[in-house]
Length: 212
Image 1 (cartoon, rainbow, N blue to C red):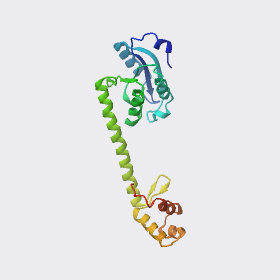
Image 2: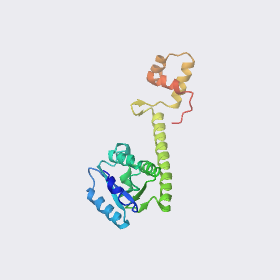
Image 3: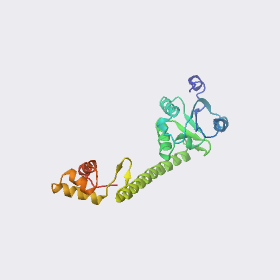
Image 4: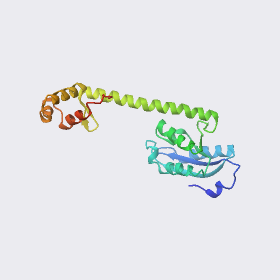
């Protein structure tokens, strides 16, 4: 919720809103509130609103209604800063956190993190943002790499990935070879012990260099 009348009352103070999230199995929100309020008083900022939600930290930022509302309000420049207790409040992953920071920075709104004493309006804060951008990129690359390795191992063993079976590259090559010899899909499916869908999918994708 945002108090617009308060936001317009003192143009000389930084206008700040609080964002607080707790999970159903986490500490009371008062623990965050006390630390945030103390920091606001110390900095002499003007608190013009707050956004609170009780939601698991495993939920992505797109499923958090109060965070989505905060980001929407930020586009109207109703405040200059968002203050949170710690970075984990902003997202379930480094990628989520950096996306939220970037979305706010794009409209000129900065973030102050109480626990880590991070202020993205300062040169140190900007350096921090650059570092976590690098880390988020590394995180994405590591996830993709682990997934590729998992799929490769499963494919080599002919195991399941999701709802379907993965087939080895050797078996895929064999399917393509048999089809080129005029062997029917049904015969290939029976002889190689793979589904008709796998045969069809292999032929659709055989011209692409496999990346997984």
